[in-house]
Image (tube, rainbow over all chains, first blue to last red; front, side, top):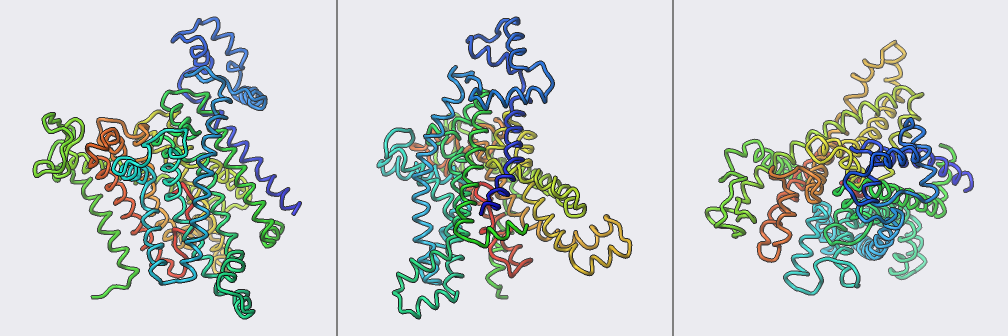
Length: 315
Length: 281
């Protein structure tokens, strides 16, 4: 296990470096001078004094070679200083932190619903292959795979908010505001996971340990709940981990439509208004969540399934 | 003639996707109106004989706008798919043929999985600004690592076969081995993923348009048309619904086509949908 951890953590180094490079270059290659942008945000003018711009550029190192710039930038980031938003004047780290917690709420709600659906529908349709339930699960999930997230969101708004009038169209604050965005994220992301769960459970149902469990005279519920689920879960869990990362950082469109103040919406808004420091903060935050979630999933997976640890060792 | 069930899907896919491509190609002949022509007296009206799918906020014919909207979507999606396939080959083949490059190229490929595709696309657009070339770049850069992995994986399993080893022992160069032993096996694989990828790219282009960061007006684009209908969703739901249907039909068409190809080429593999990552639809 220790060896597995070491290999897995070692593989993080180039990924983290690339992530920081992408974030750094998003600022270095953007049109306009970072120092001038920062000052015009701070002083609330279009054209800050030439003298001050030159001063700040020297202080932040933007007149030095690119490699030195990168070094100075990363040391500032590690000290928690990512500059200030040009739009609001607040520190980027505050803005991104607040957005991350909002995204976290939404992702937690959508993820609980997704896990519930995947476990129940996936196992149930595997237990009764060919039944009406199974066929409708397969058909509906194909439909959900095809529909883009923004279309699902629009359909949800139209039906639940405008026609039935039982849910608010968009916004943030109460539980009812969370229902539609969480439902949209669930519909869009759970379809493939449900199919994966079904395939995996069908395989488990055909295995010898399930035959043994049945031969012991266990009830069908106990066979499904205790033995099939445990055997079928690892590949699905990997995928669910990928979904978690995607819901936390990649819910760009859904958060924008429902005006959910999460990190995806913050990214879109800052790209629109060319608020480069916030773009950079969002990219770092989203990338870090992605990397951390994947790491946790891999470790849990290796904890559950000794085969994973062994292949990693021989590789 | 009766068809096996696997072929029904691909037929539907061929019909649907070729229909949409033809719509885009022959848009000036099919469209009943000028897509940018305004008729302010007929604003937000529902489907009628004059306007088969109704009109938008400026009284423009929705049907014509959707037909013309196929052009940027399909055009950029095809262009980005070609670019991703080419980059994938350019990275994956050397990685398989030259073991020394393998580690470096594959670590480079891994790095592109550290961000969701949509986020990487937005970062690129924040640098280039919205426009056809920006979008092309924004879709191609996050897309290629998948192809590089498939090309590398298939090539490596081919190179390990005794017949290929024999060919190499007889002094065949890298180019000859690639042409005769690798490409015939890589081709079908990548063609399948690429067809599936077109649908995903159409959805991504519409998503960018929806966010206001895609193809810019006055060019009619599906995502932009859809978001234009949002403020009037209660009064005139047809704008958002029909544009959403156009996007969904295109995605469905290319998905069916791709899965049909996959079933014919690799009949014993599991469904492609099971192997896709979230956000890379």
